[in-house]
Length: 324
Length: 134
Image 1 (cartoon, rainbow over the protein chains, first blue to last red):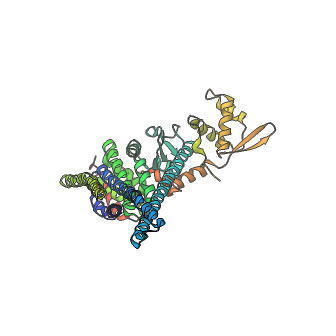
Image 2 (image 1 turned 135 degrees about the vertical axis):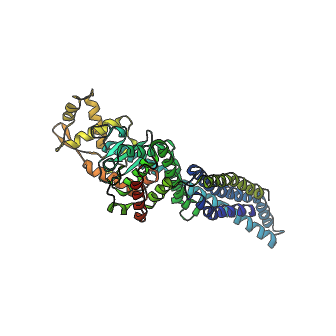
Image 3 (image 1 turned 90 degrees about the vertical axis):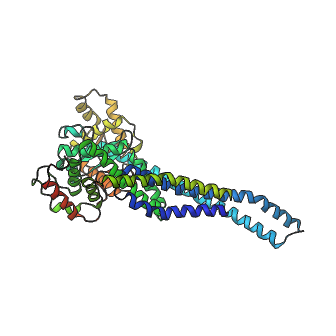
């Protein structure tokens, strides 16, 4: 019983305190992939700890059951139904009930999570198919660079990818209107990085976790951070492929809905800038002013240590609790 | 009304043909028969009448096409215009209808807050230093 409580307490501690430690480390988006790995490890630690706590609870309920049966026998025999025997029997009964409730809750949450993931997958597949039917692709009017991409007729500039087999990249005609070829190349490189990096698995699974456990900071913050870091990781890939400047221009163009011309003075982005979002600004800044090398190395070292230490600490807690 | 929740179970490979057929139907102002569409399509590609028929039947089953019996044949019309479908897709993708957003990866997402000053400064900086970051 104590062992289960200790491990559960550890899960709560990690779930509530670790996000505060991780957030400043991954804020800059330096080492985006390492950051994703650390957040995923944190989330896994919480889930595994909660699972181990339930398992320990079940174990103590099962091992205590013989004592309960013994107490029951004695009380039925009528010779030794002392308060001590009574209390012990009640305790074992309570333990069994707690184990049962915890198991049921665990199963229910797992089921809800699984259903949510499945729903998301189904509606995503439906969206991809609807986009392929509604959009144009490889027809006159679609630029050479956008071959194999689904073009939706919509004024609003937007680009996104829908995972699946095959993955689909959707670009609106509004986006094609504001993007120069090099900028379009950067956008497509970004989306291809999402698809080939299978980011949808990470962001999809973590968002469903956050939806099932909205009150747990590890999942709530973690899902947002994983999405943000996945964007930055795709930005890194796109910058390597298409160049940083076209990527920044594309981010600004799509984010503001206005063409950002490569030539100075040619663009007039003024009024439309108001719609641009927080995420865009952070990503643009990161691309414009990457952290200095010393800081990058320091962050990478700290993140790697967290990555190495967390599973070890968790394992130690489990082992100590199980042995107690 | 514009339901495509049932589309997910479609047979792959038919997807491309479904798009071709839908685009044809959208181009017509009035409802069309399978025969009319088949006559148009076979001028451009090798295609069997039954293929066109089953594709249109699929699209009807999935909610893309409405049909009215006329004599021995059906006349098919789109349940919604292409613009309506595009708008609905955009809404779903950008606003995040239901769970779909959970797995869509946007190039630019989360339009929240107002950092126009910050971005304005970036645009000015890019304009001042056109050769930077090349």
